Length: 302
Image 1 (cartoon, rainbow, N blue to C red):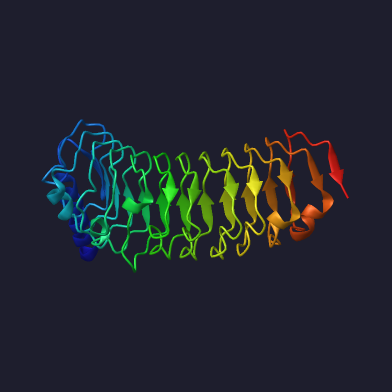
Image 2 (cartoon, rainbow, N blue to C red):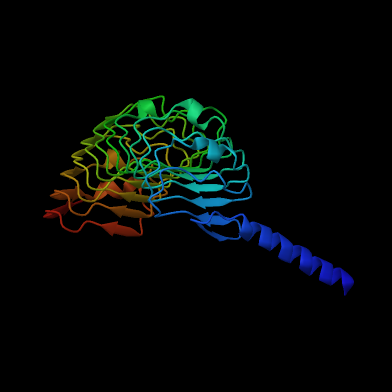
């Protein structure tokens, strides 16, 4: 009984300390601190070191008080969405695994920006002003698994930007201005499972474009300007789901779907396809879902 009372008193004391350390302008629950939507231009200097998740979205933070972030040694998740960041915030935390920086004014990211975040798993850079992937660089031996670059201004993907992301499983590049990418742009992404390239300006899919993505299962290329799928375009992948809706594809050729034996779902709706040869499906016999709606098909040839 005495031991139980001591435990209760100790727990109550710790809870009081945690609550007492909470900055007055923020709300706290356990190790979660919410300072969002306060119009703050700086991160409070009196944030307790025990915080695991800091919500600081929808403020006017420009990154001038990054020293406050450097003191948060237990931080695991940081949300800085919808602020006024023009440069990558200076953060040094071995514990940080998720970082959200969407809806800011970022234009580049150097290797040094993430060198002190060795355990970072998820990074959201969507809705910023990146114009090229040359300005998005990562150190070797990183653990990044999810990278979101949606809604930027990227026009071209070179062959160096993603080469160190060998642990990446999901890459989102939707709503950019990508018209083409280097033939080795994705060559080192051997762990990648999901690649999203919706709403860009791609006009064709070259042969062997994804040949090094040996674990890729989902590829989304909806709402581009794709007219041509070249021979062996998807060779080397393990695609189960392929989305090519809302493009300008006129012809579906057998060689374009070579090595798609794992494919179970294919969507080609809202294209300009007029006819299909029955032999097209020879390399993808496991398809269970096929959407050819809203085309101009008048014949399926045998």
